[in-house]
Length: 169
Image (cartoon, rainbow, N blue to C red; front, side, top):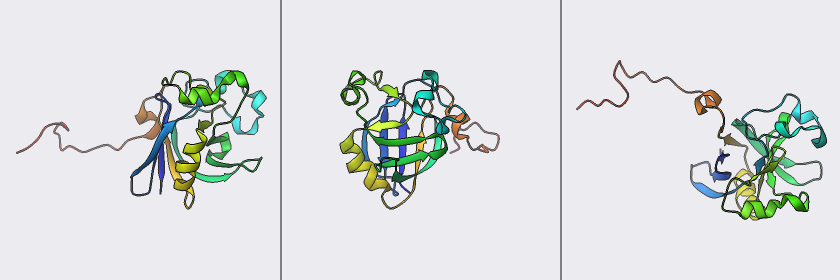
């Protein structure tokens, strides 16, 4: 399956094909608050009912697929229950300057959304949509406040009593 890595610290998205080849990378707008979880029942609320501290982009591993939003616009649904999607940048209010934020060199000003991941229109249409057009895929959203092991788990490695960095010749 194709997959995507969302680096919240750098506010970047990396899209790979099913063979693991990088298809493209681009900037992203993320939830206005730092955090790796989702408020309970968030996907069932109207936007106006989501408090500022609840506007996070959750970390984790998600199976995502293309679908249509309520306005008929194609989006990449990442987690339907929490209303988390990746989509073309939305206009928002003029004071939010979303398009300008995507073009800035700093990731510091890329915190503006309710939690969804906004990407440039050309990146969505030229990279994201084609990558996920014929298949679901996996989206990895890297944590920023919790250890990666806590979010993704890990496999224990049996080193036979030796430290992992020791070598035998």
